[in-house]
Length: 469
Image (cartoon, rainbow, N blue to C red; front, side, top):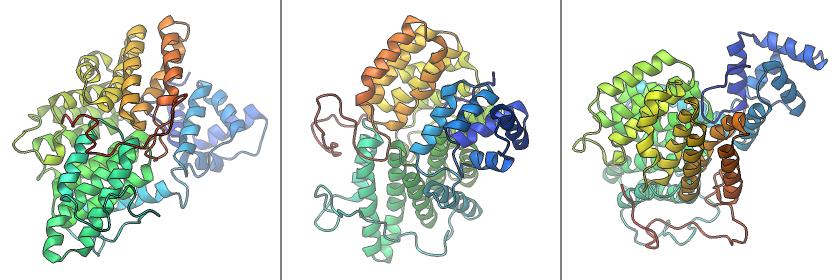
């Protein structure tokens, strides 16, 4: 049987290409194998190329024969196809929103690397952003009236991101970004210079929250604005962080080539200006993308370089990197080691963060990686226990990205379906389904049986505890 791809959510196009290359087949060869197996002689390599580039998605007929020809579990390709449809337009589709957003960001990243403090697009980066049909949902004072300083609101929203996920917060991030962009447009030249870094931070945070809510095109568009503003502000460190965040988004979608390009560009362009913590973070972005893409040597080199750094320096780190600590960096190392099939040293690095409390999304994300590492070690019962805790944290966090981390665990557990622990976890997953967050870019959650809809809590609501930092 063809080896499984690296862990993590995969889109169908990259997955098909990887499975084909693992067999050493050309597109012509796989087309011939499909024709021979199905008895349909009309399939060509051009159609296979369209599938891999996601200009088209194969229907159920060809998905079934791809499963036979590639000798993979039936659910593997079906899940990848469903994920590709869920993200909207195929990744390579002409005119697809995510394709355009990805291409525009990659182009801008290359220009930023050539001149990280230059005028990236030959014009101001403060064009007004699209405003929803309701310009002031919830009476947030976007258009008029006194409001708290935007920088303080962004700091508060970042702290709320510790406790809640993009499904609840993405709308708040977009509104903060629109407010900042509008203030920037209305300001004079001196005020604009002071607001540029705030605009860049607002766009980076909005991109992060949109990505966490399952809106990759919205996240990539916000990151592009953030990179333009960071360049205009002369903030090379923030520009590197923006590209690192975008790399993380693409890695989660299975676009490992794009992820590696953005991570390397961010590190190269900001290395001289970055704090120790930011340099380590960007090296970890490089390592993960390389590991997921099967580039083991590049991943090990990036991990080694990150390990030589002293870690975050509280006196030198930017305010927007407050969340990065030694435990997080250790867990990032563990995650990459799992992707490299080295679970032995990975498990003790992941365990403290996966079992920690106070940041449910972080615990859910790294809990998924810890469960994969335990499965690689053959510890099925322990993996199920960890996956169960991660599932509860995913529900608590309201993060579609966190919930998505458990997809690969569920698939891998299928090989052990007769074991009692696996059956218990499957029952737990079914029971939790109605409460898992919906990842369609909407700031809402699925309703459980007998529950009524509720509005997402706004940052600053005193009915929930303050951020832990």
